[in-house]
Image (cartoon, rainbow, N blue to C red):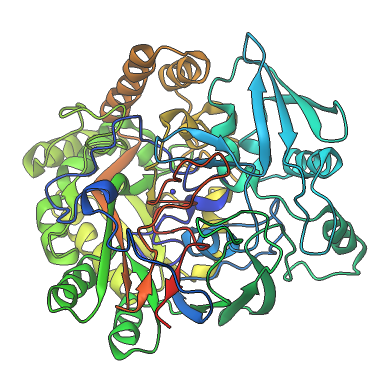
Amino acid sequence: MSARDAHRWWRTAAALVVLGLVAGACGGTDDTGGGGGASGGSAEAQGDPDEGTTPVRGGSLVYAREAETSSPWTPAQMICDTSCHQAIRGIYDTLTYIGADLEPHPFLLESFAPNATYDQWTFTAREGVTFHDGTPFDADAMLDHFERMRASTLVGNAIQAITDVEKVDDMSILISVDTPWVNFPTYFAAQPGYVASPTWLAAVDEGAADATEPVGTGPFVFAEYNPGDNFRMTKNEDYWLEAPDGRPYPYLDEIEFLVQEEDATRSRALQSGEIDITHTDRGPDIEDLRAEAEAGSLQVFEMTSRQGVTYGLLNVAADSPLQDVEVRRAVAMAIDQEFRNASRAAGVFDLANGPFSPGTMGYLEDTGYPAYDPEAAAAIVEEYEAENGPIEFSYRTTADPDNALTVELIAQNLAAVGIDVTIDQTEQGEFIQQAVLGNFEAFTWRNHGGVDPETERVWWHSENADPIGSVALNFGRFRDDVIDENLQVMRESTDEAERTAAAENINRRFGEQVYDIWNDWTFWIMAYQNDVHGVRTPLVLPDGTPGLVEGVGANGAISLPQLWKDA
């Protein structure tokens, strides 16, 4: 970014605006991957088993995804988790695309260029691109796009520094921002960069078109959508991007996305041949699918670079003892994370001490985050309660029984030091909305992990910590001058050492203030049939360079145009 992407304890629903590369961006230029718990290594280390083979065109593919978020498919209004991003990227292209070099490249854009002070950016549309309904992609389409994105109560938070957007000519616009913004194009490789047909959007506004029948410029065209069940898309015969064989992407004729919420259900469906491909970040299922891959019955791709983190998200604005940093420190010290990891995640992941995983900008071996020490936790509780009364708060998770078992284990740890936790289960359809509105005290969550740490600003800056009951993407509602100042350094600076130091300062601040209860640095795997290919193959970008394979759109998502199957 994911609580378990709106429904499972380990997923982040937080992909809702800029996820993948913004809502979940913590990586830097060091792409060394995760820690010792990840057996697969980075995408680069695992290699592409299909390199040198000739793709076969045609055929269909069934992709089982883990969740469905109830929202329209209009880019400015989508409450988008990993499953949402994975599917909708078949319909929408983005203005920019992250390359294998971890830098943004023009995609729908022909070019992007800043002025000398990085507070104005010129975006130029690529010639010859049309939406599925025949509407041209040009400056007018971009003006409509930015007007809608800036007005969005969700996406608008991520790009609120934009002060003006004006038309330069038929293909170009000039965007002004209120501060130097060095990595500005990175934001448009994710949801702020999803571009829909302005003709279709106007029809949706008028009630003449359906918001659940999206129209983009992407490699696939909308065919069918049944909420909570399936989303089917067919090949865009006139797609603008050329594949290495000289013909347009995509290779497949059709992709159908199915919703199968339980990881175990998807795993069984894959093993029985009912589906072609799926994703998971659940430890026991990763272990099972690894064993299947070792036996040769299927393939797995472990997406272990730029890992996200699973954690207990704390609302420090709520009227609860969690407003006190010493109470938060006691909560952290009371939880036996090693036992939780072993018993609930099969020991697959490495324990986290902050938002930045090993190998990413800002990672520190020691962040100052409290170590497991139940005796010290009990002493803090005793001292606090002597003055303030009992420490009680609710811990919200989804209605999934697996999630409940994990939170029950955490609640037992907390009860052992004198903290009383009430478990509050919420249906997955409401899970993200409650986070956005701040209707929680503690929340199961997964987020972060990406290509640039500055993009975490949307989740951590005080400008996004609106009061409880209003839409805010700083879900924990903390306001911290140290974090704000260092986020600003990362936005304005072109010095990599300065940016790294700022990211490390933020990591230490999280360790000191315990705004979240860190659990694991987690990774996803893609599991797929032996006749499916292109999963690890980079998309060839318009400038001829390879695109990023892992985490395209969101952790647990891959690019779709280059997928193919045996004849």
